[in-house]
Length: 280
Image (cartoon, rainbow, N blue to C red):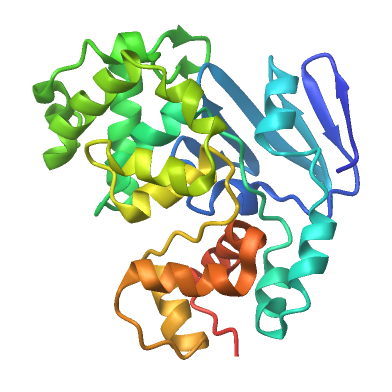
């Protein structure tokens, strides 16, 4: 990605493999939005605003440019990823449509909490819950509220999380936040291989196979995983002609096809399928 940093701005030129919609509206994050052509996103205690000045040329305004260079993974060459995946004819329409998709590099604790909340949930409810958590336990910033540190979140009770709209996930959140706050897991997980990290995540309350794969992909940047939700299930049946019902085996099918690029492939297919477009 061709970018420069100028004080509180990241300048993107000829950004052929980045769009705000592709990066932010692809199921990875919940604290973002768009108003009058300007996109915004919050991660931890950082906020960025993204404006397209001319086609494929953007200014990202933030007090922490280095954080968002890493967050948007601007130092990874997505042309090479797209070139590898383009050998699969069935993917080409999704790759062309979703050239602006990027896999974000997010704070691990934030991803774990957000995706426990996401289980069997819908986007508006997830976003509402996450924002209420931030408003009650995050730090007041000039632009709103940061995502809370774990030591602050450990003060939240089951009743608090129920009031925030987390439903049956409330006791899971209390248990997992306590475990993360009182162990070295957040430091140990990035050092584990994918299989070990998955087993460890599945031992956390509220983390099932799909949530574990989302955490592996969006919080640990393990690209040999393939989270399967309703949209990917549709891709599997409608476009790959699959008949398997077990989503773990559907994930295994895709990983066997796309290997260490599976995570990237999943995002391109997810982004495309949500537009209700057929690959074939």
